[in-house]
Structure formats: C-alpha cells, structure tokens
Length: 215
Length: 215
Image 1 (cartoon, rainbow over the protein chains, first blue to last red):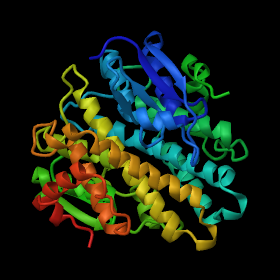
Image 2: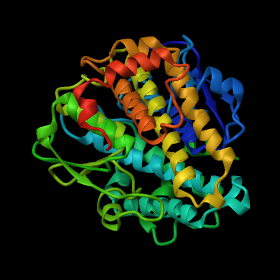
Image 3: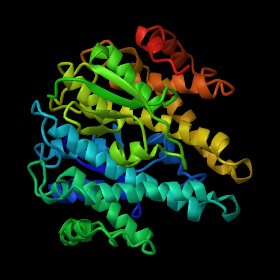
C-alpha cells in the first residue's frame, strides 16, 4: 500500500466528497491527507483537473504518492479503509453476502445523492425556461423512496456491519442527509420518517460530521 | 454464499445491465441466472419494481435466492465474481493498489456510460424545447475525454489485471463502446483512437459480446 501524502480533490459542497472526508475522519487519516478544492460544474469544468486527474470532471479524486489517481468515492473509501488496516468501514468477504449487502445499501444512499445533485442542477443551474418538471419530480421521487427504504430498515441504521463504529453505508446516508439539509431545507425529509430522524440526530453528533460541514 | 436461482432485473438497452450480463457470460454463470425485463425511464418507472426491488428505479438489480436484493452493477459484478470462485474479474486485495486501480479504471468506464445515458436522455427523452446544449455538450465531452484516457493507456487494455481472460474494467469499457455503437453511431468514436478501436475489434469478437447485444 502506498505511503506518503495523499491529495484529495474535492469541493466543500459535494456530498460525494463529504463521504470521503467522513471516512478520512472516522479512520483517523487526517494527517495523511492534503486537500485541493476543484470547481466542476456542467459547462465550466477545471481544464487542468479534467486533463490530469479525472477525465469525467467529477469529484472526488484521490492522488496517491506515486502520482496515480483513484476516482469514485466508493473506490477511494475502500482504499482508505485498507490503508487504515482494513474492514473498519467495509466488511471483509467472508463467504456470506454481508459485504455485498453493505455495498449495495451504500449504493442506494449514493444513488440518493446522485438524484439530489441532479435535482439541484435542474432547479438551479439549468436556465429556468429549459427546466422539465417531469425530470425534477422524478429525481425527488428517487430521493424520497430511498429515504423511505432506510426508514423501513432500522437494522441497517442501528448497528454498523463492519468493525468500526460506523460503516460505509451509514456514512453515505449521513452525507446524503447532510446534503438535503444543506440544499433542500425547504423539503423537510424528517417529516414522516421518525426512525431516520432519530438515527440522524445521533449520527450527526459525531465529530466527523461537524468537521466536514459544507458551510 | 447464496445457492439457488438468481434473478437479474434488466433492460436490453442498458449498458449497466450489459456489463452484468457480460460478467455472467464470462464467469459461466448463465445457468444460475433468470432474467426479468423492467422498464424504467424518467417519469414512468415500474411501480412494482421501485416498491419491491430498487427504490432508485434503476437497473440492474440482482435478487438472490433468499429474496434479498443487490443493486448497482459494480456490487453485482463483485458478488458474481465471488460466486464463481473469486478474483477472475476483480483482483484480490494484495497490499498493493492494483485492486483499487482496476476498480477506479472501471469507475471511469462506468462514468462514461452515465454521461452517454445522460446525453441520450437530454437529446431524445426530454421535450425538444427544453434541451440545453451546454448540458449535452458537457456530457459528450465527458465521454470523449474518457475514451481519450483509455486510448492513452494501452496497458489497461492489453492485459487483464485479474485472473480471468478479461477484467471488470475491460468489460465496462466494452459495455460503454457497445452502447456508443448502439445509440451514437453518428458520433464515430473510433476516429482518432486507433488503439481503442483495435482493442475493441478483438474484445467484441468474444462470444459474451454477441450473446449480450442490445438488439
């Protein structure tokens, strides 16, 4: 595993980058990490970033000490978890489907973030006369159904399924809910979801959450 | 690991579902798999599917014999790879960054698919008077830069980095290129990318490719 400094390309407002920063904080890797803020948005991506770091023009990306780059938050989180000793955020493969289930549940929270960001693009970035309510309604429906899914599965919330005090699925859910509080305060997700709200009240009290706040 | 029948929810045109079907074929798991076609598109998702299988309304999803569900193609491919004995498509964690690099390169190809599908939505599904050329140009730029990235990294194409004859990154690239041939024949991606075109000519001759054609 690579030693030396790691550089995380991120933007303070990105929920995907926040997931990685939550993982860094929970794994105690802050001292290993440098951060570089990058501005990426449709039509105005940072030219140097897309040329050297990530051709997709997405954040986060992690540049390793040898200059190689890892993209996509789930890949970066697995790398960081391995760097910190392994299986604190993501369970080991053990012949059961536990690891796959955690990664799948994580993918749901990640997909919720993608829908929320797509909704933000549609309702803020896109010129007003080109907005399509079918699209924005559909993105919010994805977010709402994903939250309902977690609300109905308190076991996923109650107990981490890896060795650490929180698992990667829970961190992704936290990043999603934090993004909703940050960008969609006018859509109160806690209404009708008491289990999720109660879980979030506790999880948001973790020092990693305050340390990675977008503001 | 779960025995018994697996059910893949998919759509013939989806590149994400094709990646999973390529993995099934390459791993020789066809006999284990049932398939169920699902129609998901913005504003008209299958109500039963989003209620029972995937709240995001995305495909693919894999329902296991015990009724549990895995979503997201990278999670499903890892499950299938483990089911087939492990590390034929995705390298084992070995203390180096090889596994993470393959997963990251796979994420680039996957991101290329996402951009290509977003471009298709913008240019076909969205009402014509609501289309935004800044957005569609940006999505195609993501695809083009990702293809250029692979064109410049022939090592990624030349040799599989896991134990099987093709790795997950190569399968994702194949699914992306197949989608471009299927949906964007008017944008000839082979032009100016001779390495990628030569690699694709060989890879597309694999029986798994014909067996998973969208048409």
